[in-house]
Image 1 (cartoon, chains in turn yellow, purple):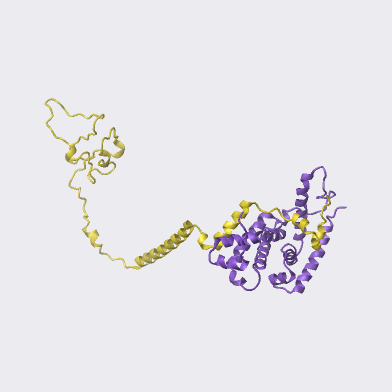
Image 2 (cartoon, rainbow over the protein chains, first blue to last red; image 1 turned 180 degrees about the vertical axis):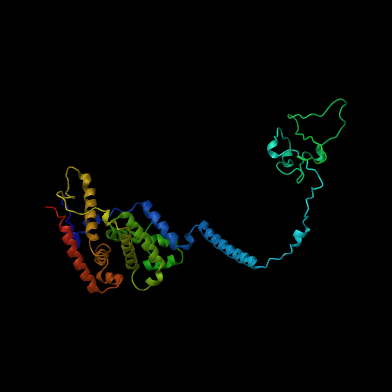
Length: 175
Length: 190
């Protein structure tokens, strides 16, 4: 095999077959596909994925919303501060509605252990809130039956049965 | 394999402007190899050449307003691809990392009859030598030479692409050939 004289390339006098043989190895089909897809994405607007178009619209809307928010925030800052509280604040009671009452310290959330919880009680059992601010609903009226206890029996907690809170409300004592 | 689209370049370009993906694919397949060859000769690196082809097609098709009625799409494309290749070459400065063509005692492409599989390596070596020699040319001479020899453009087309006179094209080609011969003569095997 006679090696091609590279100087003949400079002359342009290489025969076409030899010159083609010196061409670079063509890209693979996958490489061409990648390039072709990229070109289509840039050249054809409709080739852009819907998600990308959606992101652009969402970005534009978010930008517009930020602009509106910034204007509103600026106007709010410029507004004079009045000493009169709004009507809604006036309507709010200023004193502690519980001041007259002793707080019933049932338990804090870290002191409570739920042993069993049956039926639909989970929706009614409030845990972790102040016992008198919310409703500690252990049972609804329809779920409670009040009857006379048999003579000589005492109610006792049974953690294998329904949860039970026993307490009484007495005068406020200093802690 | 899909049959080539018989439409002219101008027809395909018109369809692409209306969002026809098939026309874009047909135009790409028609010109990609020529564009890649030009870019590769200017860069000497396959991945960079592919980037130049990609950038060239995108720019050629997104700036059609400057193209219409001035030249064929092929010359328009090769102009942009060659400019993209030169830009990439300037940015990446791959000359340092590439094979430095110092002549060695051993001819890199001497055929070894006992190892016919080496024929591919010979061509690869020669490609490297050509890339190295082309890289030593001034950018204007290199672009002119590659557009004419590898891009298969006529003097007139090269002049239109580069915005120079035919006389300047011929002058650049003359000096490019002289330099290339001088560079490549070092690689002629005894």
